[in-house]
Length: 296
Image (cartoon, rainbow, N blue to C red; front, side, top):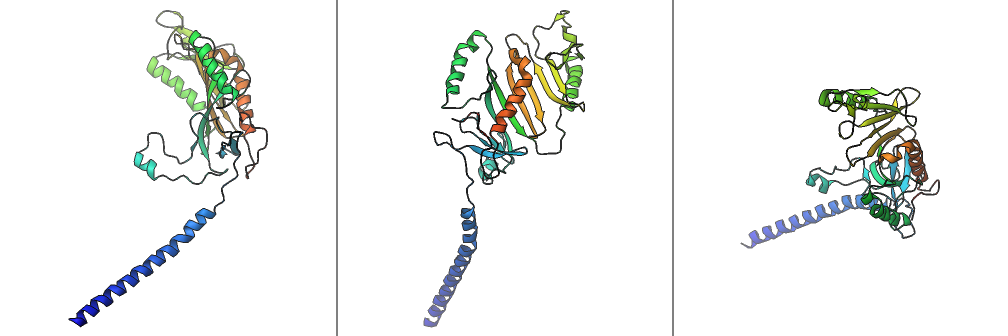
């Protein structure tokens, strides 16, 4: 009986030693990974006057530092789960550490057409935007703010709207049964296309209200590729333009929405938005290359 007890005690002791050794091995193997993760230095990040950190990453071909309070919503990075992704996927997803090389998929901000400034929270532009909302929109006056979305392009797809325009013209023929006709005279340096040559087939008069009969404006580069594509509505009280353009230097696509009143300034808008992005450029170490537009 005593011999049996000794054997049991010996087995328990041996098992305990094995568990201790296994635990030690696990601890040793895990520690370097934790240590290496902790040793990854946080990149330098610029701050505003309130101590808020910039949003950093690589947009297309350039590293940027977006001033705090500028982004409308949040920046999405390549690989981030979409808004409608499975919640289980979102919970498990771990984004790589933010660096100036982490590719940005998209982000948005508000741009003031009248002076090329941007909306920033806790800055005068926040008050300006609120005032314009209260004093202009209720009375149908032109709203001087544009909604801007910027998309980094990282695949081999061509940076032009050639297919987009062709597909829109095809859809008009197949769905609404009218053609887009090029107008003889350009407008503001843009080639103009009007649905059914600008005439409502039901009334025989110029279009007054139809969401499917938008005016289309395009601008080609010297190689004949469409780099700017704008469509403008005039449906009842809606008088807005949706403006898209590509920039080859940045390798990005930009979307802008604004009142049709400001269509004559389309080229100035494109230049100002690129100037804004240029002001956010940084060196690989995070050093600003210029004065940030929109910094509080």
